[in-house]
Image 1: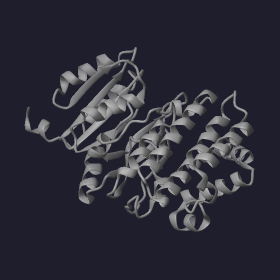
Image 2: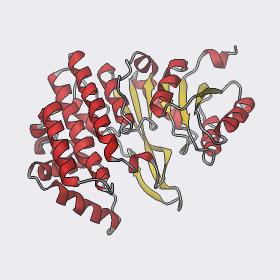
Image 3: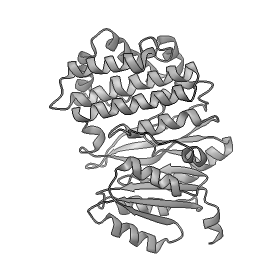
Image 4: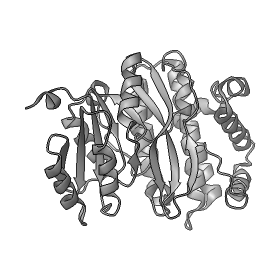
Length: 351
């Protein structure tokens, strides 16, 4: 084993399923990283197309950089855990196989993490329409101050729930306990939420667009069905149990409750609204009952209130506005107005 293989700085895990059209561009962006001491762990999740053949060819060309795991189809959640188990890097990142990254993706995130001895480094990204190549938005590209979850747990609200613009300290991910009932959707969010209580050191930001996230109309995040709702609620209840079991602080639990409102009350209900088999009023009522039972401090959250929003920026102000409409029983009308702004005025308001 050569010196490069002995000292891996970053392991990048790439779960793959039915992405043969996009995978070569993704892998080309990863083998072209300016940070040399990386490994790329490709997970073939029982893909029925040509993904495995593509991975094997790239593995042949870059035997010291690419590792291929061929397994039966179990979904992206299980694939990520399989990758974490074999990763040798000091930090672990994730890249979706239909996206691609900038050449300095690994180098800038790793340098920021190392400089601060951080548990988590977060980079900027561009959302790009797959069909037109139009840049829809750039996010996390502005300067943000570092923080710790112990000092200001409310800032977990501002972290996007996707793992592909981040580097995690590997020892934290390797020490996590899997969920008994991982969710079929919002799995990225659940993965983050069980990791946050283990992070005692800082979260740092790299304000540059490092990831090109390709927006596809048929992606799973845009196709939530009513059949998946109960499974998501079961998983989120288990996440809450973890925070209680691990004796997280009251402030950390209040922050979790606020995150639950953001992702279940706002984002989840918005996506359910586009489902043809969804009674939105009934869905909002069911969500409210669930939040009241499992995440009760959302109703008077110190991290959604006006004073916190005023000092923490636009994302918190938008959440505070949605929270007020929700508590007034006007959230269905709020979602209809939001949808009109999105589709008529073409203003993409991110939560």
